[in-house]
Image 1: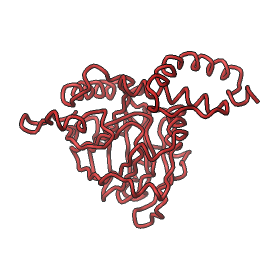
Image 2: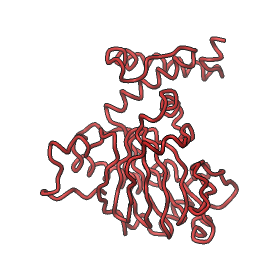
Image 3: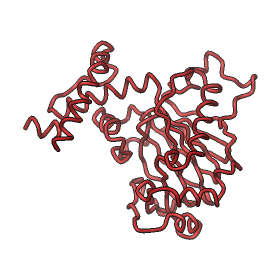
Image 4: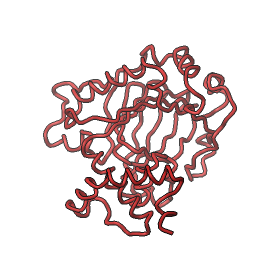
Length: 301
């Protein structure tokens, strides 16, 4: 859970703009998760045994001394036992991502909801707007480079064990088409690194156990682990504002698939409102074309 700031350290009204979930820049707060029984080794192995194999993503990694500066995503490793991979992380470096873990083990779901309650109580500007809650667990070896990617929501990345440095970038460095694809597919692989992004990077944020970084909506990021196995827990969510923005990106994605060149998000508030309200119609059309095994692009060719 998030540790509420002490009264004298609570953000002032002047600071609230950067210390809330509408911030376009990352910020660091604290959590009380280290030592929680759900994250000890035996409990994590129990979770790994419960999860379906397709929800446990395991990838090859580069050591930080071997990095080529491209920050590409390593090859996915299949046909291995996740428990064994976890046990061997100190000797055989790998990166593991447990998808939708709260659907496989209700205890993590309850912890996720409790965490959300502390967010509402501790972080200015959230109130009752949080929705689409989800949690994902990262288990990774020490001294590795984690690929450049972006998440389809905003999130709090909580460090529980080990330490790492997070390198985050403004969402604005991404093209509209890239953001639309990320919003549509929910596939982190939609975002890849370019050398010119480095000049726009925010100041690196180092995370030790008990520290948390807020990652803004669609903001790209990459990670370098320090020594020792790292256990990190990500809580993702949407707000009323981000749901509206996603609706606009989804409609723009469909319009672009039709060969059109839609007005980017946030250029015209009235146009964005029309797109947001029309998204249910586009969503229904997507389902129809999916049932027919066709896409918008194929349909108009």
